[in-house]
Image 1 (cartoon, rainbow, N blue to C red):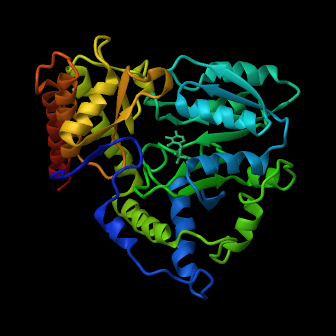
Image 2: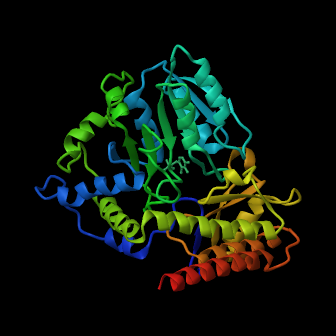
Image 3: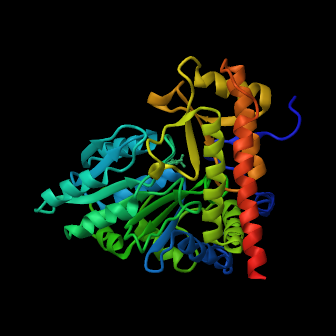
Length: 400
Ligand SMILES: *Cc1c(COP(=O)(O)O)cnc(C)c1O
């Protein structure tokens, strides 16, 4: 028996706002009804706004982010194609593994976990590729395992500097809708996301943004695909229909979450994530702990991966948090297991929730054996949030 609220601080699935959750409680409906497009057509336009594309197309697959990874590859590449990827955390690692399994010739650059996409090394390899053999360059925008955000515009600049024609694939699963992401401006050809992170929905939708260039490539791409064929999707999506039974409940949820995003405004959402994340970082720092992110330029505004002192096991921190304090922290994945716990700070979130996460992190760290001076982390974050609110008030007053 557990009383009160369960605190979910994993970086996805994130908390679903109450109005979004309620919006999904509707009867089943006919997905071939003449008015089905009234529900679905707005979802494509709404998602294009979130991805920041006016020239690309958006496809919604029943599936998770991983499905959209696969759809991106199989629709636009050929078996044996050479692609440039980098690996610096669990998610970038798994995308490499998938690309290899699907038969791509992957040139992988391994980077210490805590750093991001090696833009300069990409630049060197692209310049050296005078024959244009590299068909695609991959970037994990926000590595959720390490709390590292990478410089996607930098990758675009590296491609442009040598006039390289490779497509740019970006994993935006834990960035899109929470931190700055500009599909058109950054020249992203394949943008991947899922429903359960910044979009504040249950898992179940794999979302793919596709540029015109990638659409062109899909017409001749020979990799095998059936369920994920974007041609079938686009044909029916034009009128709001789908080639197979779509998850209508999630569509209702998506409509409600897009409405929230529109009402708050993407710029405000991005600023809120930055503000909240900075409070968490200050709290962590005040506790005497370090982030996995090697340098401030890599700091992720959606998730912080926090190293625990060598004398304690991060798995204990997570276990005590869950058992005693009703909180779920993210775990350390593969090589970070036992060394790291993560605080997800994305989606439907406010300062009070971040303070709860820090406060319960202090309790859980103490339970795991760390010598914690209670309140230090919380106080540092409070100072920051108070100053931020003060600054916002001053701005409001000045504007009046
Ligand atoms: C969560 C996540 C994924 C995987 O998405 P699923 O929805 O679990 O398939 C991929 N990449 C990143 C960066 C993620 O955070």
